Length: 157
Image (cartoon, rainbow, N blue to C red; front, side, top):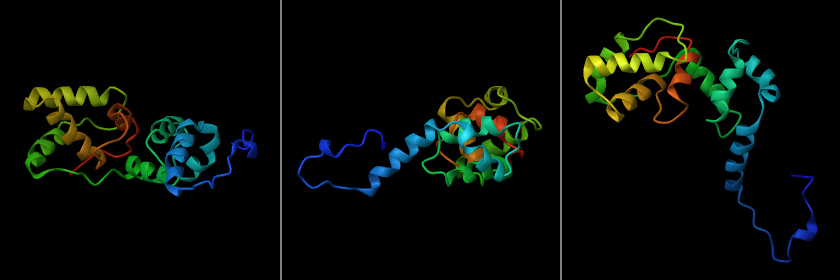
């Protein structure tokens, strides 16, 4: 930003600063930050070096501040508090019973949800959203195939 800063580009009207404008800018910068720039910070969190670059690829697209990096590692390391609607509790329990053992890979989400679909007849949003919320405790986030391969603990209710 400093390279392109030139006072001659400003008019005589007073400039308006809104701190809220910084949030999307910060997120945009983080989304473009290479792994090498945060490698030490990620190592300090305890992320194993063999998954650290993949972790950063997933986390950086889903954070607004650097402080949120630790939140994502905590989710992958410790698991999430499942977010499960009462009407989905039985379904999620059945689906979790069908989860293979760790470690998971990029195909785990697909093979698991296909097995759950066959066993329960659920499909589409009724299949995927309750499982996303149960595994991550969130309604939005990274691709679930990426989430599964980074999980260090098996999800449970």
